Length: 130
Image (cartoon, rainbow, N blue to C red; front, top):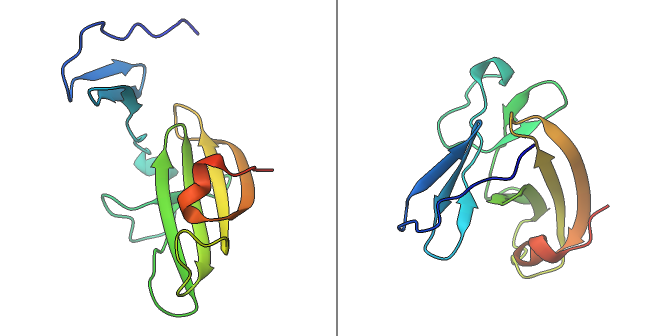
């Protein structure tokens, strides 16, 4: 794979595309944009625009992000990883009571690695995953 050749003098919100990946200039850095998952790789029903999806090794399914009951969930995209976390209802995002999964995907949206950690949701990018 050749090196990416980002524009040298971008304006805020300019985009750059290479292959099927797209980045947007924030004014300080190039931020990768979320990958679009082909409809042929979705499973189940009810996936809508903006849903967070999880890959089970064969297809993508919507992740239910609920508040209430006994569990809360969060999902985030912090390039280059997708994060999915759960904790007992009432757990603060800064509390260490979260179980977090870090998902790595390739340019086509296929999962290449899944790792887990426990800790604070707010510290998800600096936890030690295995």
